[in-house]
Length: 324
Image (cartoon, rainbow, N blue to C red; front, side, top):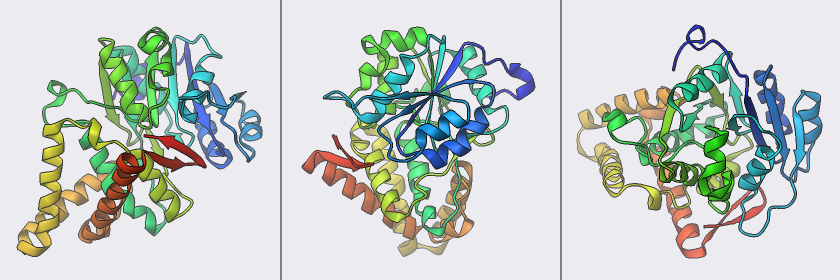
């Protein structure tokens, strides 16, 4: 991404839409980082002080009605927020994101330059030890949508990153008839939105978020982490290109076999993972050294997600049942 000096810091015509369900604590961190930009916070049935915190920090608040049949809560909240503004550019941010100084300007500058859909995966803050278990999820999620491959622009990503999505009003109104209408029932709304953009003849551009924006995922304990990643991976394999899926499985098979084959193979994977983990978040070198533990956790959650997705056809998130 360009430096702040390159892009000029122009956020005119941009509105940030934040879907929020019981996000009072997160909004207290996000909204001060969005000073000077039009922000709409959509209160999606919160039981806490989400709306009061948002108003107190200068955001416009929209109270979403219950989602209609066939809509997920997040998609309906995003659509409800977008309907309140005629801004030429929409930025959809998750409430657990914090934008670094100049970060939003850099993202908007990239959208102004590239068009289409611009998406950023925030850098993952890790605070408590159990959060280290998210390491493989943060690495494999970009792999699964062909983001950041050595082929660069020759292999377009098949998805996007839900925490940060940027697109023009004209494209938003065009896809699927009306914005989030195209992804109304999708559990993986970021993947579905990226597909709708590509079906409309536009391009998806993905970036890593280090020094641009960060988030702390699932800070409320291990059960929340398990439920959240189960939801995020529901149907994920079904949306991955077959060759990509094969390559990811082959790489993981090597990870599983390395501790039982040769110390040098294990050491090579440890070094590789230490580099990858630091690219996506504040993960400890010890997590790479002891990678069989977070790898076993990843496999367990993935299997749980597969059972809930393909056998029960539903997952749970924030007190709601999502059909898969």
